[in-house]
Length: 315
Length: 293
Image (tube, rainbow over the protein chains, first blue to last red):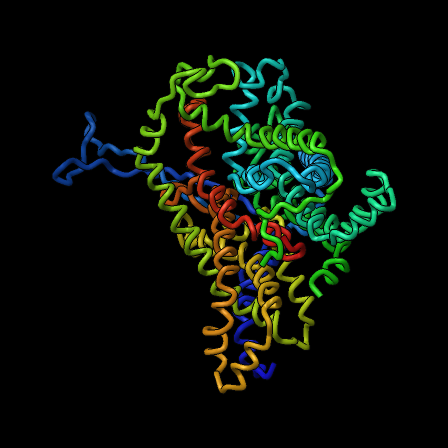
């Protein structure tokens, strides 16, 4: 169109500047503090001052000397010291970090494939004549937008071992370290399988009717239909769902926060959870920034792997 | 937006027998009930007397397994903390969504209609998109430090700015797709008729895109409503949001499942309603426009 370049930039620039200011700048700042050791200390000094009575006269002790009292001054001081790559080196020797990496890797490695596989199977199921399908599909949407923190507490009541609805199973859902991680995975699968399902269903319904007709006439078996026709055709959709789920699952924070508090011990302390605790509970801000950068790099690697496909999608 | 409305039933296997359809329907109903169960359980728990909480039999169906009561709802909604949390979350979500739409809509239009030479459009789009997959824990510490030095900790403004930032890329990517799907002829003929930039954009383009803009606004309202990490970090006493209120009650009062269930319901009802209202836009929205629903 004939819009002048000045008007074009007027449209685009506010958003670009906003993202630069509120995302790119914080990321740069975060990298900067990752090279510092930042300590928040409370400095306590005691001062002896003479005690005064109501009239402002010094109070005298029995021996006639003026009495004194202590005033405690608390001052919060934050010191920062350049430590070079120390925080990054520390990451590799920190058993908590390795534990969090392991927890996050197991979580992502188990939850994401389960969501994709289950979502695809459910999409196949719903891609046919069904009784009351619109209503059933609407029900399947509900978990996606449910407040994650509320979902975590809600499942806390469901996994409650004495008197919860699953109590009869006798499974230590939250008190056993392995089961606790499994429970976190299960909650995420509950929340995000519907997302994969909806997207795959939309993609299946977008395929031309003739395709199904032709496969039927050719006498293709259901398995052949799925593996040789549907999966290849859905590949771009599967990629985008996989990317979004991977990126989202790596952020894992709300559900362990509410469901297990990271426990028992640190059995469900995800990487984001550890970085949050290090930075904003123990205020080791420099180290926490270095930690967060580790996660950022992991996400960037994934996005880069998908980059070409993303460019094609948004071309 | 969607060529086939979500409610339309499109059959895929015309040759399938009635029995097969009945069986598939049965499986689908069971699956839907399994996914519904946790929400149902919150609802059921919220209606129980505290003494019934752990003793109800079976599926905890009101009137059959126990005598329901609204006491938990009434006592929870009557607390000033709950009212304040709802108010805070509403203010933050409304203004963050408006701000994101205000900044994002023109940018989306620019990316849909104009060609930028220095950085190609699709790279700009992917750049916006990549902000969306960024782990929030990487920006929470600098945000905390900046907000602290600006004296903005524990204010609505801090959370409005932060949430607008997170939802802005979503708006840009989704609405770009919407604008690309609009026929360009209308804008061009308006131009030929001598309409200016502002007239074309506000009188022709925006009304056509209004449903999609509204749906995007609702979806990012829900995102902001559900946000937890930044609300936890940037607020302490005054600007308690609904998710923080939800988390707070557990620590201070022990595990009172009946109240927890009410709070979970209060937190979840607005975003879940939004999901149902914006159903047609959800697939496109959550895949950032990559898959048409």
